[in-house]
Each structure stands twice: as structure tokens, then as C-alpha cells.
Image 1 (cartoon, rainbow, N blue to C red):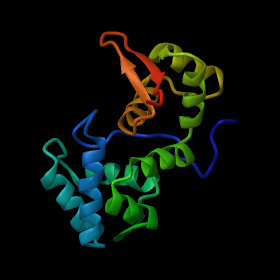
Image 2: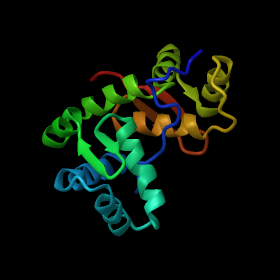
Image 3: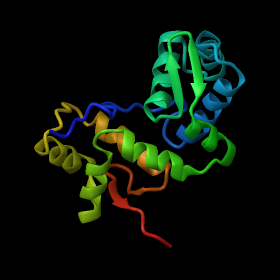
Length: 170
């Protein structure tokens, strides 16, 4: 079965949308670096990101960062992990790419499929379902692809029905 207990089964975007995930990640990590109070961080997320209107939404975004292993979220306390501190200090996108691969279910499978040949999201979704993923919509595939774009692992070609490809080394 593709789902393993140690990996996050779902992955969500961060505020700002596609193309802004890493900038939002940096902002959230800086917030956590300034305080260990989860409530204070949630208030800052709501105040900082225009479209985040509630602490509940802020908590969802904070969980994304925790699922990536960059913060430990333990009720009233939130702290940077060693990986989170290293990313905050260096900005090394390879750390996020590694976190996606190791900590998010389905990332390795998507990269394997795209390593075979470029594909559109519909075909990727179909192949993931065939592999045992029970995603009823393409959202989970789309979010993973957008994260993989952000960290430079895949590229998108076209607009209406884009094709995704593994990034080639230059």
C-alpha cells in the first residue's frame, strides 16, 4: 500500500499560491524563529497573509510546515527543527525537496512516473489511482506538482492543459 504512517498523506499549498510557496515558507519559519507561542504565530499568519482570515486556516498552513519536518508543532508550543533552522539560515531549496521526498506520500511515485515520460495531470492522477492512491480529485496531484515546481524538481509546459516534466540538469 502506498500510504506509510510516517509520511503525510495530504499536502496543501501555502499562502500566496503557486510560485509563492517558498516565500511563504520563509515568512512562517521567521515567525516561528521569533517565538515558540503557537497562538502568536497563528495571529501573525492571519495578520501577514491577506487571504488567511482565521486561526484555523493559519493552523492548516502551520501543519504543512510541520509535515515537511521544518517545525515541531506541539499544542501551545511551536519550534524550528534542525532542518527548519538550517533551511532558514541557508535558503537551500534542496532541504525542502528532500523533505517532500521523504515526508510526503506520493512524491516519489510522481517523480518516478515523470522520469519515465512527461505527462499531463489527468494521466498522472489516473496512474496514481492505479497505484493505490484514493484521491477522488486531482487536487492532491496538483499540489504535489506545484511544490515540486517550487523546488525545481519538475517543470510545467503549456497553460490550458500543461504537461509536467522532470527538470533536466543544465
